[in-house]
View 1: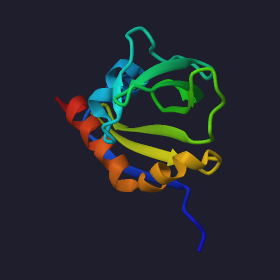
View 2 (view 1 turned 30 degrees about the vertical axis):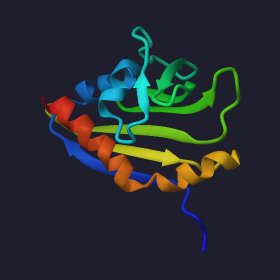
View 3 (view 1 turned 90 degrees about the horizontal axis):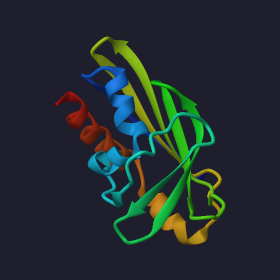
Length: 147
C-alpha cells in the first residue's frame, strides 16, 4: 500500500478572498487560526509579499522555524516550507489556495504535502496530519474571517 503524503481539505468561507488571504499572509495572525495548536507567535511586520520571502514563527514548544515562501500569488496562493533557523527544509510544505466565489465568499483549500520529507524524526507528526487537522485550521480561519 502506498502511503498518502499529500493531504488537503477545502471549505467555503463567507468572507471576501482578500480578507481570508490577509489572515494567512500575515504570520502574526497564524496562531489565531492554527488547528494544530503548535504555533506560539510571530513578530509583527513579516507580511509575505513574494516567493523567496522568509518569516519566522515561534512554536509553543520553544522551537523557532524559518518559513521559506515557495509559491505566492497575491490573494490566491501562498505556500511555504519550514526549516530550522539557518537550515535546509526537511521537505514538507504548507499551501493555501483561495478561489473567490463572489465578492463576499471564497473556497479555501489547505494542503499539507510531505512527499519530500526526509527527516525521520518528523515522520510520525507528518503521518498524524490529515484532513481533520487541516479542516480545524480552515474552521478557525473561517470564524475569524467571518467575524
